[in-house]
Amino acid sequence: MTDELFQRLQRWVESFEGGTFEGPPEVTDEEREHLRTVGLTLWRSRKHSQTIMLHAYAALFGIPPFIKEAHRRQPGRFSTDILFHAVQNTASNLWQAFYFDFDEHDRPIPRTIVPLTGVLNVLHGPQPIPDAPPRPRISDLAMAFFVSQIIRAVEHLACRQGIQDEKLFEHHYRHLARLVQRAGYRFPNDRRQADALALEVDAHLAGDDSECFACWRNLLRVAERLDIPLSAGQIAAFLLPNERRYFEAVMLAKSSSATPLP
Figure: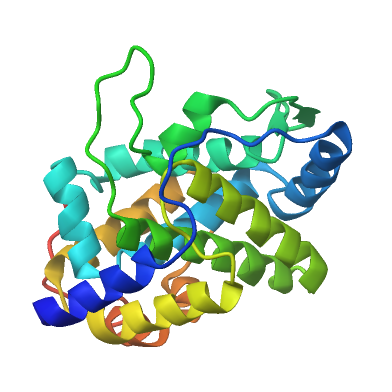
């Protein structure tokens, strides 16, 4: 990867919509009810939502520059313990973004607002969270890739359950795109741009890196700790082409020398 290539990808993301913090959008009661239906269909339980995030993090872990960026912000960011909480927190903030929550029995209950702190927590937005220390901002490029993989994971798992509703997927995409944009990040309204960016990132930034392998191993440990059945083969089936090649070469091999993070 050259600096020129990386800068080209950054300039591409800079052309996307968003970039100004506006906070959660105002919605009508009818819009809120519709978004809740979308969310309940696609983020239907705690375990399913956490499974979505495990897939999305697996894709993020295939891109060494994004792992290094995260470790600069927070050393040990993807250790097993931190990742265990990150998967749960990110999943809960995302289903709350669709105006519902789960009670202690995993039954959905409606919400009337998207909590500002929830949006900022899941997106690590550039604006400070009240009464919390400021956190370094995720780059627009890394955020655009990660969100695109969250959306792709939602659709990947929905299709495995027999849900192939393009209109439903479009509503889901548009809502998350708007939240990302209003959190101060750049993300395209045009789905084709998001998909094309992800493929370019995979083609040029995916790599053979020991940190990737360590993060993937930690991810499988987290899945086990969450009591979510997730195999290396299932992850491989989701990953983008170059990520998948590196993942299969090590994670599906009989042995590996990569060392997990503490």
